[in-house]
Image (cartoon, rainbow over all chains, first blue to last red; front, top):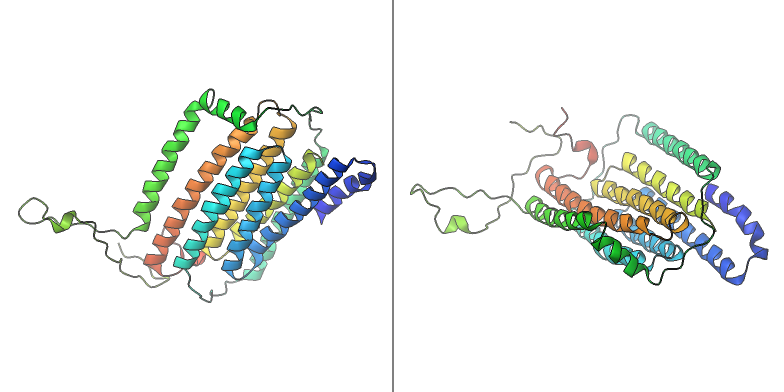
Length: 219
Length: 101
């Protein structure tokens, strides 16, 4: 609603725009509505499967906004990584953790949600005022690069080479860490002979013992 | 059709993400809210990159790094949720107080 108010004055001057600019404004309005509506759905819907699919729509809408911002490479990366990998990962997690349980109502639960909503609305208002009052030093002439892919690659292999390599190390660490965390742990018992026998070298999984919810872990 | 519109969409997305992060009971939905907030930040970076720094595209480079970190965060976070679900048999955030008291 507030966003529509911000766009309203721009829509008022739509008649004087050329066809290309008018199309851009229209696409931006549609994408903004899609992104905010599906993000609200992600947060507010009670069925988490619907939330996961709406999250995919949010990611797709943001990829469309990247296209409006002249960033074709990052838009493709957004679709591949977020829609293709992260969203599918979340859907798999929902399938593995699909437990329909009634959450115990909290003390003053509605009041907590109302306070959180008020704080978020206040933060949004603050950001809105900041965005609209700061005189941004916008360059009127958008420089036209031959290809954003070439420009980003030149950054990656010259002045951002160390962060690029660190990112690959981070991905490797996250991969190994996720596997270690997600598989059930098995500590092989050492045999009395002093060297591990054949069976203990195999990666056998065994289930953890289940603790009832809410129970205290005894150390 | 300017910088403001994209920044406002980013701000709205970020605030929705914060609300979901604070109020959700389901741990998977908390991770989804974190993804929303990361996407809001990425949208801001891309808008600044296009309107203020269109010759260098440094914002796009930062966005690629942020996407990488977000992917790693999603993988590790969901593995942690899965591990906690195996041992505690719930995904309710209010039950996850192993480190509290």
